[in-house]
Image (cartoon, rainbow, N blue to C red; front, side):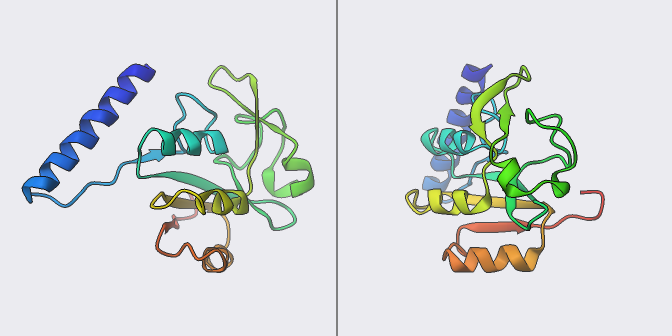
Length: 166
């Protein structure tokens, strides 16, 4: 499966660059949904690093907010599916969340813990050109925007704000 994924990415990257060279299309950016999840847990620092090392242009990650207001990377409103914890994320403080382990595709604990958004922004400082799309599942857009500006990443961050069913 991983080989097929890398082959598809390679073909898409080659095609995008070839077409751009001919002037027929603008360059196409390819980003990984929740990072590269074939090799690492979704929404993990490892999944972002895998996207960077794989030559992708960026990644989409999901943002929730802890009980004490820390933006974290996690898709589900509860911890049960993707971590070795349980219960609603918004009822847990960052001090508790940061010690939980993310699960792999076989639902086994990994060495990866839940990252906070500031960790991602710090990591991005040494990866020029890498773009991150933030899917704000349960996070205040104004607060997140202020963090983006504080880290001077406004040209490399895309905010996605969905409806209440998001």
